[in-house]
Length: 345
Image 1: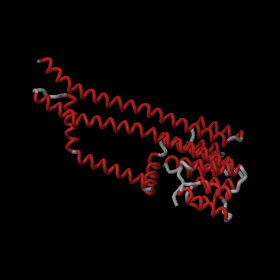
Image 2 (image 1 turned 135 degrees about the vertical axis):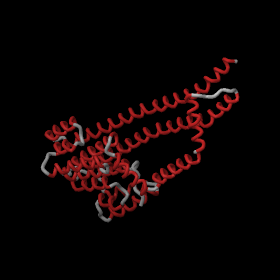
Image 3 (image 1 turned 30 degrees about the horizontal axis):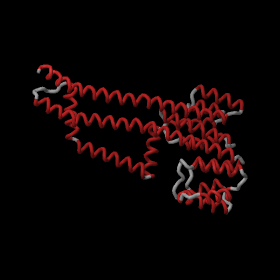
């Protein structure tokens, strides 16, 4: 059975929230959803959920047995059934997945635009040095003038690229095929994501996003009535994978196990900044730790997006400036000998 798309998860949580708020049982609510659904992929797992809940299986267990939903969602719904806070948990899950999808879309857009711009600019430069410069070199050679400076260097580079064109095309083709294989084959995509997360997921922007997910998960778990150790374990699974983050969450669990307060454990683990740690300690005294963690998650996300916008805002002008200057230098190196030749005539 195919898994539920991440884009559909917040809508599904919202639908379940409305059904529970209206006092409709899971079996009846899922049956209503199935009657209105037209997508065959959605109907495939909705049928299984309807059959399971009609036989008396709890919703969380039915979702887990279907294999179509993330473990985090099934764990949280099972916990909500035990604590009687299903409406609050479903609303929190809806916001969680909406925020997650928005972050992914923002990151995708932030990467796509500079990448496309870089490809276009590189194509322009390669076209200049492999096709345009040789024409000018032949024309100037017939007039008894040789190009020098940057244009000559670029001409040699262009010649090398032209001679190695088959090899370069083959390498690019292999890279494209590998990228398509990773994108289209779920097992390869999962392995690549795990490798990338382990190597780079705990640093810089990605590390900040992991901390944001950790804070959001902790807020949701503690607000749902889960004890601190279980909340830490659940949040660690969601944001884990990166070596740096795993070490910090493991240290936090160890400190909790030795009797430290949640705020002290989160502070000493290094997951949050000293300013955030002071806020956590204050919220622990006032009994508002879940709300504070949710606020920290939102602030971390906003700061991450600002960093992305700042990075994109500096990369795009840098790419344009570099390629424009390079193209201008090449053209000037070609035009100056021609101007000297015309002035001599």
